[in-house]
Image 1 (cartoon, rainbow, N blue to C red):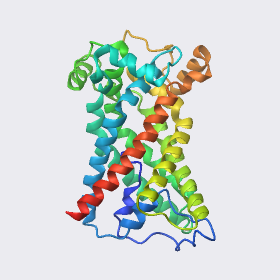
Image 2 (image 1 turned 120 degrees about the vertical axis):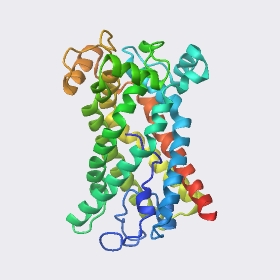
Image 3 (image 1 turned 60 degrees about the horizontal axis):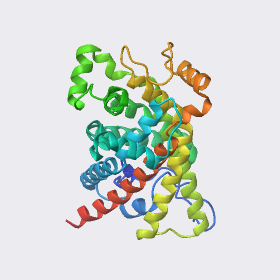
Image 4 (image 1 turned 60 degrees about the vertical axis):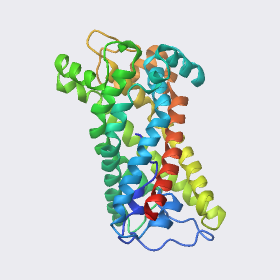
Length: 338
């Protein structure tokens, strides 16, 4: 799954008390601080609910900036995943894609990404916040990495339900096999509906749910653990740009780590969504099930093929989280001063 800002702003704008007892001093004991960026939480926790408008606007701005910055990496990631051969380097891959139609080719498929960004993030963050509250209460007030893991796993379901149709269109536009087939996103939708039916927009829903649940759970849990450890080691909470830099670094590491676990699901998802009747992508399997496709890819292309596009995907997720966080907090600061 892709996080619009890479930060849990739901806690930043909440005026409800945190569940469980107050955490101990980080100088003496690791805190059970959830997967939240410390600068955002410390600055905005407990503000009035009217700030939710600012949070929504800042999130929209950050999500848009993130997509614009990382879309070339997303394009390259999809191309690598659909190709049965060995991946070339990231720079070489970007040059190859740009050679097909100039720099604008790197941004093919950006419209579906922009359109689904806000509803996807809103659904995912809301599910995460509600689930984390429930799990924390069920665990007697413990709001730690395990709680974040459970909440992240649940949050991937509504996120996938919203994002799947947009992902199908994006992958179709990005696939080299379909160059010239679709003029733009709207033409792609109309063509799919006319030829393949409405059900084609739900292609790969099951594997998308798995991809998002796995990534969200590992990301939020690992970020919570890293953040807790960092706060315990430094003995005091960093603020300002130093705190933001630390948050971005932790978020980047957590994003790369999470990608290690969900990459196989993403490869299968891309190949399923790129397939049109009469076309084959990669080493096609006659069995449509997710696990059968994974086994087929591993058997025919090697196990490493399940991690195709890993470098581009890791850079995409890590860079996106860093850009989203920086843009979000800058936008939020500006909006608060208006």
